[in-house]
Amino acid sequence: MNILHIDSCALGDHSASRQMTSAVTAALTASNDQATVPTVLYRDLAASPLSHASGPLLQVISQRWDADIPMNAELRAEALQSASLLQEFRDADVVVLGAPMHNFTVPSTLKAWMDRLLEQHPANAGGSQRQPAVRVLLVTAGCGALRLESPDDLMSYHESQLKAAFQFMGIRQLHIVRDLDDLQQIPELKHAA
Image 1 (cartoon, rainbow, N blue to C red):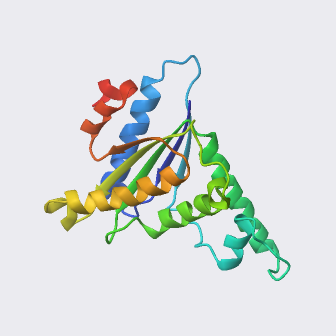
Image 2 (cartoon, rainbow, N blue to C red; image 1 turned 180 degrees about the horizontal axis):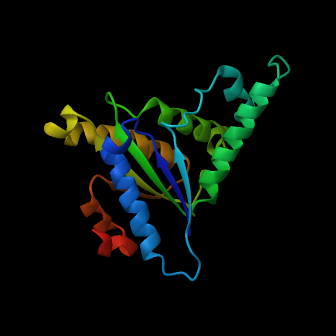
Image 3 (tube, helix red, strand yellow; image 1 turned 135 degrees about the vertical axis):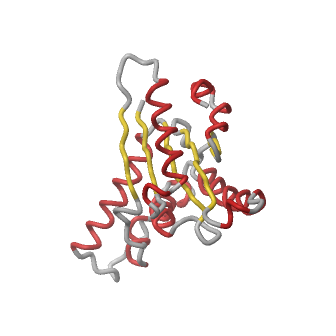
């Protein structure tokens, strides 16, 4: 099993979403019944943020490049990194994605990652939307006052945006994990909750 574990909250050890993604990834690796050891690729978008996509980069990664865009070493490196990010996503059997709500949306570092995936996904160019092999475990958490008040409406809004993006890419196996009790929804992780 290939697991892509992504954190995006800048709060480090104080982050509820980081604590939950770690617990979910540990439960996944412990529940693996295959003879091979699961491979976990970890990406911390807060510690190593991606640059926000420029107009030229978006044109290059969405294959709408033309001669008016100067292809320099920096743009080439950004395009290669974007292709690598998409390949990491495609190679994963499971993506454990920490997506905290920060100021009513995802952290900008997570948005930069999503932009790179969405812009170069075949569905964006009218191609196939199907990505059946990848399952996404979307770990969401509200910050500060959002945890103190009833967050259901805000969290539903937050989660629906993320669901729409993954559905656009053809992801049909998406589980929302707000707390560890939600692991009961995932057959191979029922014992972990």
